[in-house]
Length: 216
Image (cartoon, rainbow, N blue to C red; front, top):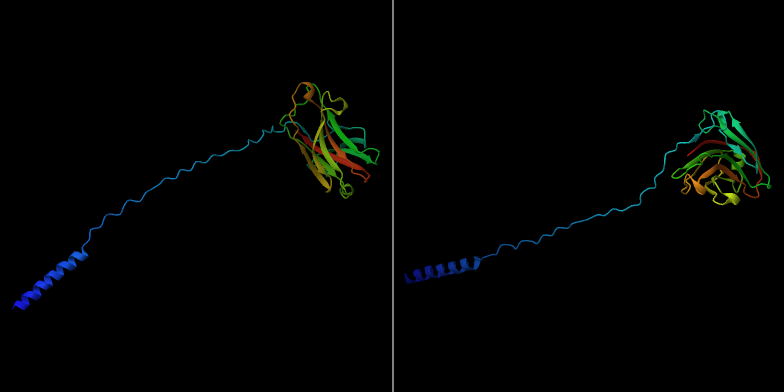
């Protein structure tokens, strides 16, 4: 009987020890630190210079509109009524007959302006020139460009050119040039606008250019 009590007592002690070993106190997990990332974007750029829409047009529908050839390789100019040589395909154009034989290296087709002189500030000058196939075949190629002549440009002072384009493919070529700022009065105002073609040595060429759709 004593042995039974002893076994029961030992069982109770063992149960208490096991219970104590399995029971533990745990602390709640510590809160995780949080962070907020703030992104600030700064956009910078360069403003596109303002371009004034074209308001002056010469489409040579019925005449040359006062445009004419200058001395040099150009020997004649006039009105062309054949729509085949019209950039628009519906109206006429102007023609310029030239002889580049080495004596002259350039030709100009131009128009004078006054009362008032031109103000081309913010303007894009455009012109189309027709390149004959035999001229386009020359190597190195001839080039075309746009030239502006301001008042008071004696001796070539103040003359500016741009929009240089190789005449290396037959058909219509677009020339376009945005000149630097010119005022409407004084020495900076524009007296004349011209479409020019330059000979490239050693190639001579005789033939006709067509000019059309000049605007700014």
